[in-house]
Image (cartoon, rainbow, N blue to C red; front, side, top):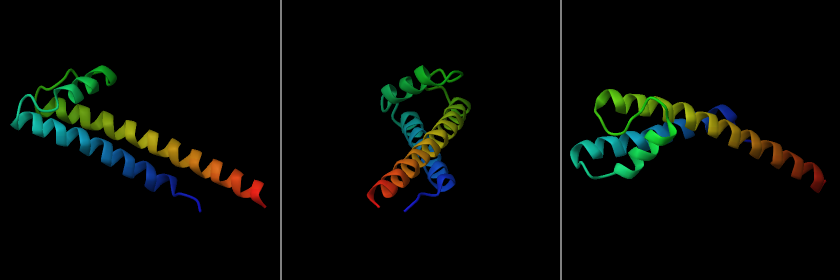
Length: 91
């Protein structure tokens, strides 16, 4: 079985971005919630400087979408490569 690289990549990107959006919105409603996660985003993604408002949250969401999509594509490609190699070795 092989994975559809595009589908896995987009799924990972959307889920990763949704996680940051959820935490960011929760931080707006309950300010101490998710500070560590948002600071992690600030440490990893240039241009995002922590909780700050809607504009900062959009920047974080876009970074997470791209980052998650790239990770998903690499993970699906690696899975397909390893699964195909193991299938040939088993025969």
